[in-house]
Amino acid sequence: MAMEPHTLFNQKSNATQFFLMAGPCAVEGEEIVLQIAERIVKITGKLGIPLVFKGSYRKANRTRLDSFTGIGDEKALKILAKVRDTFGVPVVTDIHAANEAGMAAAYVDVLQIPAFLCRQTDILVAAAETGKHVNVKKGQFLAPESMQFAVDKIQQSGNDKVILTDRGTTFGYQDLVVDYRGIPTMSAMGVPVVMDCTHSLQQPNQTSGVTGGNPAMIETIARAAIAVGADGLFIETHPDPKNAKSDGANMLHLDLLEGLMQKLSILREAVKKIG
Image (cartoon, rainbow, N blue to C red; front, side, top):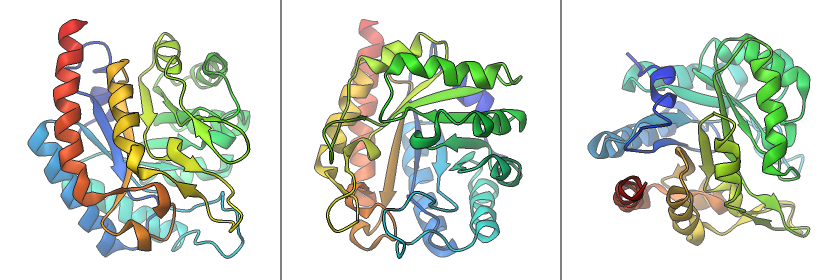
């Protein structure tokens, strides 16, 4: 039986531990997804870190037409549901249009709104109306304060199960920067706040048409987020990032996840002690 997301996310104000949203960028196939899930579940279980397994059933925002987008919507969603049923953890996936909300909600526990769609009212309302938790990524083009309106749209649609995730802000044409003032700013809206430690290191729209990244800085981003009070972390991870079918340039190698989580757990404990 999967841990209820409501219980997990309601730990916001007094949790001694952060929660983790982690998994591959995209669902590439059942075998690899279950392999990744098994390792993440083992690591987070050992360290007492609440987990929401992440995987995109389809990638709608690709720079090039020939980029990998998915293995088929229903096939990928069934794999995510199998992760939930096999390992007893909630799962999250992103949707890209209002008519996808109901379809995805039948298989997952949390619906994620991509950053570039965070102002799209019809998608926010459709996600809200499923009754699932809704994780909205802050647009790269928005100030943290502006995310209050995304929260309002979901809550005014009858759903108070909102999560906000920072994933960096556009800095020039091909880079992002994280403004850590955004975490307490969005936290003041009364919702859990997550730091996306991998997408915030993207280097978008490179000349090759494939997004670059800087995974060596994942630990830096994660440490800073914990230090300023993030409730959760979002980390895409893969056992072979160089050959991953999507966003391999900024994913964390799966072999590095346990060591990073150990360090961050120690840091979280220290942060809670000093208030």
